[in-house]
Image (cartoon, rainbow, N blue to C red; front, side):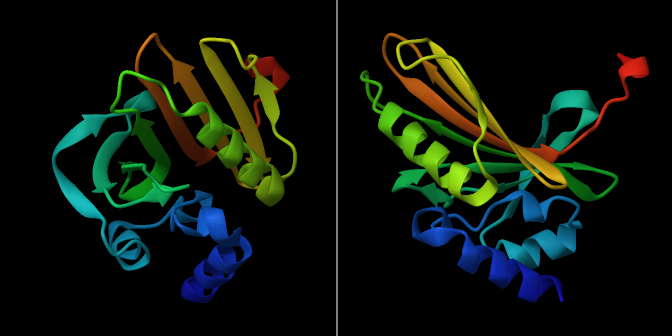
Length: 165
């Protein structure tokens, strides 16, 4: 059943995002299910520390979005994927990521509806968030005088009670 759902989600995701078999639908998978869903995933020799005690145990290095490599780290807690991060770093002195971030944002808008965006085109950092049912997608574009980065984060959607704030 999960395989059928995975195929349907990939087919619905469109050509440009279909370059990446990664998305929020992978949240909650066990290690075995992750290996079946993402064939090139490899266990990291040394786990990466993540937010809120998560551990980056898995990485897929061949993930591509709009023709660029986005190595993907899968963060696990209790043997289930809780967070997914895709990170692209420009490898030249010139930042060329702005058009790619705009294209990824357009793809996400198509998949999940209009996101909430912070930052302007000339700002050092722009971010957008899309709420996609059970999970959120957060995109960050960070510019420096030379290289820049684009980070996409898939994580569970958490609703906080106002009394807990």
